[in-house]
Image (cartoon, protein in one colour):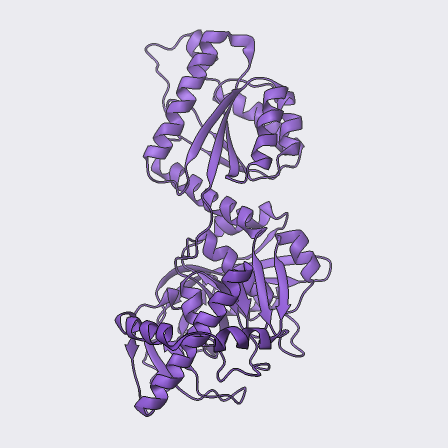
Length: 474
Ligand code: MN
């Protein structure tokens, strides 16, 4: 996976001076124990760092300002061990520009009936302390995440883990740079959009570069690098020559490896982590990048075809959120409309991400009946089974909409020996008729990101962080 930087989350515990120094020491000790045990649980993808027992408006404001300026910190987790007067939190919470998780929990998961006295109750006031604090977040329309339950439970830790992944993706979103080689496909509507608004809303930088600049990098790749990679790839993929001569198969596959190295160097040298191509503009390239794009997607680069920079950026964003597990660029292609068999066959003209393959991908070389270029090498494989989410972003002029639904992924009921591309099948959970009707009604496009890793809750959280409503088709 193309790496993101190391992140951490800060843990801030609310209290006040009213209870005296001894109580505050207990609060600190308990908070540190929660943090240590959360880290030791190995359930969280990023470390949590205990920061302070917050007792005044000044120290709360100070820590939130530090969070904003420290690039290592992806977000804040707050918990009220005791009562913490929430007017103290107003300024700091208002200033906070990073994701906020209010963990409404309690140090012990039970009430110690045999020993409970009023000192114990004064120290363990989360039940009302968390309400006082939560009111001010609601009053400020902070739209923060709330997770309520015992911090030691595995289910709660998994919820925190999933939220952390969203928070890191949100932080990383402001650094996503997409390069579009050529513009988007002529006359196509849904893949177009306002790049300035996308940068304001999601932080995405979208730059056009002429194909000639890419051709220069592609032509500069050394034959030694290509030959070495060609041999290495025989471990990961089955090379299937088919009807091609050995010379043609090898040449066309090696040309894709040349494009892979050229694209990779072009992007790495300039800080891009996502890209688009367009079969309408390939001047100077022998083939539309197929295998090349697939190899880059496997490494975590975002991609979408036909100049669709929105989906390319979304692909990169969701790959970060999902640690590049089973999260891929996809396109609705062909339907099975028979009752009881309703399904969508998803694919692309070449560029299907092998991150969802359930068999060993085959390198094959076939003609591409569009674009008028040499026969491109591509990976052909079968997709997987399981729960997934299918999501897209559309530009409605005055707003961006993130549209998606839960789907059931499955394999084709029969082999498809004449289909020269990879495929994935799925059916919307609410049924194809209802799902497709609503998707089309809501203006969702044909390019999507399909993920077997990210959850519905994560999309709700992600949209909330961006100040959007997730258009969740049910
Ligand atoms: Mn397409």
